Amino acid sequence: MTRLPALALAAALAAAPLCAPAQEADVEDGFNLIEEGAKLLLKGLADEVKPMMEDLAIEMEPKLRKFAEEMAPMLEKFSELVDSFDKYHPPERLPNGDILLRRKTPAELAAPEEGDETEL
Image (cartoon, rainbow, N blue to C red; front, side, top):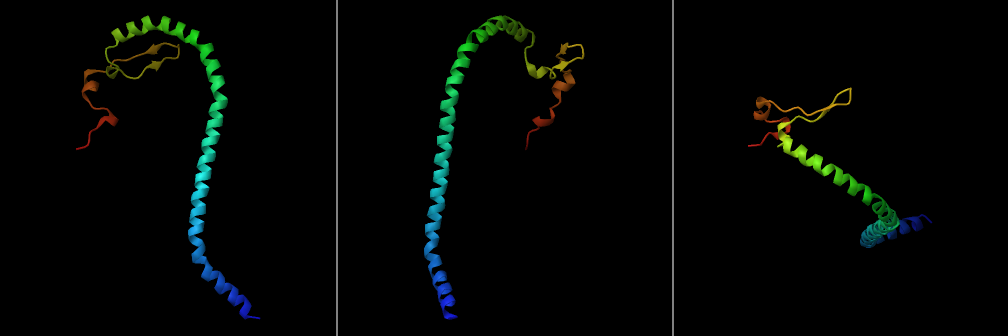
């Protein structure tokens, strides 16, 4: 009776190398199925969102057109005043709501900024 478990163990160990390639193929098939499932999920989400986005575009188009018409002259005037944004510090908002755009000094313009160092 003690030989039966030993024989079963020996047979299982002998068959193990034969099963290994099948397991690798199963894993690859599993990844392919997961990839296919993810593609189907994203396609389904896109199909669901598309009508809402089209409705939003139809609703927003007149508002965006009006905004662009009103802002274009102001932005053109602003770009004439500010020749290059590199010459200015980032804008600051004061407690009273005013926004300041400070020009950099000549020394600040000459000195490289922290992230602008070049490697040699």
